[in-house]
Amino acid sequence: MDIDVGAVQRRELEILKEVMALCGRHGLRYWVDGGTCLGAVRHQGFIPWDDDVDIGMPREDFDRFRAIAPKELPDHLALQDYEDARHAFHSILKVHDKRTTFVEEEAAPYPELYTGIYVDVFPYDGYPDPGPEREALERRRKPLRMLRRMLRRTWSDCGTFGEKARYALLSPIRLVLPFNWASKREEALFRRLRFDDAPWANECFGWVLYPARCVRDVVWLPFEDIQVPCPVGTDEYLTVLYGDYMQLPPPEQRTPGHPVAWFSMDRSYQDRWWEGP
Image (cartoon, rainbow, N blue to C red; front, top):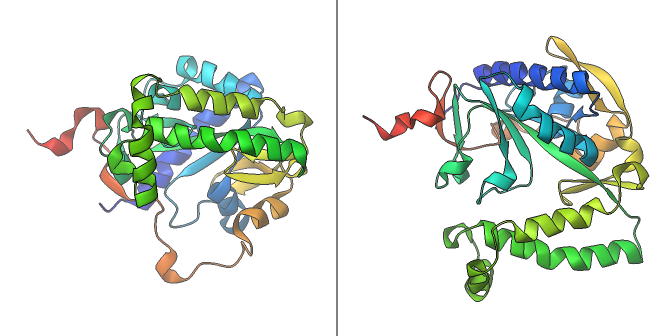
């Protein structure tokens, strides 16, 4: 389904401003993450074809935000918590506008994942240097990650033959373990090394690793009509993510990154308007 990228970005900017105000009131550390940071550096605003906003937070601040946001967000905004959604694909938070609809194709089978236009909030944990400590962590993490995916997904989510085989083999476990059993233990594993004490920073259970110096502090850069905090080691941070990040992708790749099943700027996902009268 086609979306109005410009309208989505304007609404996301409104949400971002609310999140920034909340973080400011409570002294929470945060920075714009991923493509949002790239947009600030390369475009002084949104990447023209980008359809989301990402924020990163040290785990300690992420936990505080998670507790505070439901009480302090404006009435039209809500917090989607991954622990409340059995089929949550990632262990992140979404601040979304309940008056709109932005349901991604991968979320379409799972009503508990439906949201309006949103801003993603990612937790950052500490991570050890290469060596025995990191190797031990990875050995423990690998089976938990597999179990997390299996407990939170369904057969239809398994794409490859190997994934389907593992799902079939392990499916009896679903009868005795809660859906968040593995994700809670994986999170506890990553919490062991505090963000402020670690040589490396780990985004959302190991998606990407950065030298901790990149994200220990922030630098404020223009973004549309505001200033946003970016990782202080912006060049190193963006190079880890994108390589030659100032080089624009070819025109055929300049498309929104989230295929959408249902989209509306003025109808709420809660109304299931796409199902008809």
